[in-house]
Image 1 (cartoon, rainbow, N blue to C red):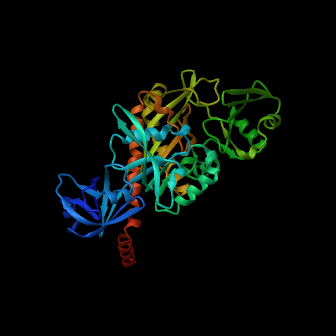
Image 2: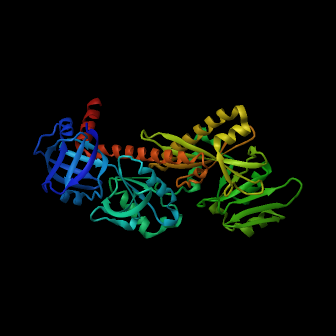
Image 3: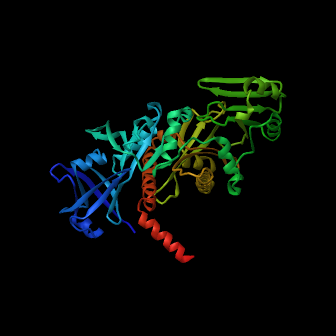
Length: 464
């Protein structure tokens, strides 16, 4: 079994080129003798060096300037060190991959939270910043400068763990980004939230789970006009959502009022609102949605109101260091009844609104919301077959306190954290993800230390 220690990693220009200095306490813990030749790894880089002891009150690993340059450690930092059979693995090296400054609000806050101190080497980068041959990245680091922050570029090891913050869907279809994801999967790195959800897949996974299916409004993927008509017989309105849309854009609300035979179409595109009546559903669809196959239709739900306004809930869900889903925050999106969705409305804390509208039942409903949200996380992770660590769940609650699932986002915006009372929870969310990155890094140790893997295989064979 490997030994774990939290260490300070630095370099020393006066140290012998082929030496690595290790504090005596660590050498004793690991059973290391002076002059032993060991391998030191960080990211996808490694060097070999001879051990020399140093006296230090804290666990410390000091590299020569030459070795520090080979490992591309841009600054002194605290990292975890794992030792097994003359091999030290330092990390985690965590990279946040981004596509454009326009979409970097979440990644910037993530790096700002790290300046409070989590043991890792953390930077953001773009796919074009990678040198695949040298296994190094020209990363952007955020560090404190006086009372503020400043960015600086530095060469760093290719990351062990990659947090995907490529938000815009158009980037996924470009050759550069396709090649990036293909190459990542051939490394020993772990990438989580590796792409935006397709609504068709997402709803299929959720509807196949008996526990969650009861919380889904009636819906059809790539619906026919007849299916939309049938839903309107049992509901005052339906919503047509683009399968690859996000942010509330391109959503159509179709309603049929009992006092009229007309169908009403409402939609928002950017700052433009469309509102128009039609005598037939066929005419409405023909004028606005020529390709129904790229949409899903979802039955409208009569939600509980906050005063005269309607609201839904955004749940921020994150993995922790034990690979468990945790509800980091619940925000309430509130908007006027004349609006199609709550996008562009205002924010209050979820528990406050629930207490205002449900009174003594609020605690039970909040627990139900958390339970449903966590279940969605596990179901989607299993369905997609890859790691997820960061989800935004959109839910609604009806008059009877029943929880309804509207959507899940693998690249959630953090608009709910703009509320003053929710701001501290933004950092909590970031720290949960940092702990999750550490979990993913530790999980890789079985592959990194071959002797450990062979020992486990031997034990399994013996059990059989």
